Image 1 (cartoon, one colour):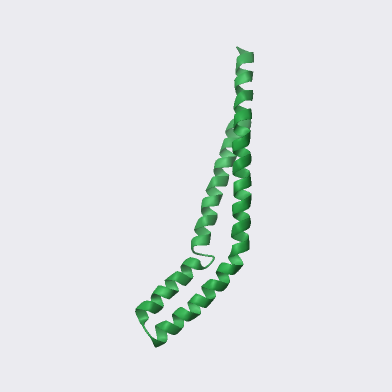
Image 2 (tube, rainbow, N blue to C red):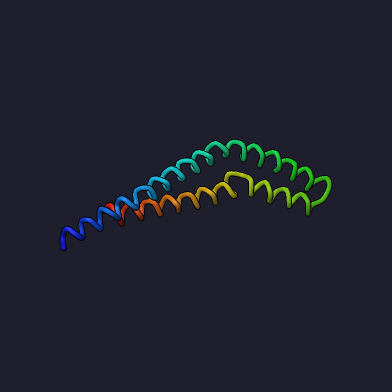
Length: 103
């Protein structure tokens, strides 16, 4: 009985290893992309925010507010933060699998 349980645990560890490795590589790549793109998104949001303020004051308040919302979504506090949260949840899943399988 003890030998069967050992073989089952070993098989589970062997099956879970590629999944854990894939999740680890996926989170590394995603965090690297988020880190690299945060500078570009910051610059783009600054340009769009300045354009939004100019449009808000001079042309159309509705279009200016739309541009300011777009600037917030592109800023590092908008969609990139949501992507970082999602990648963090994938990393939590990897740790949960590791804890369950490898103890």
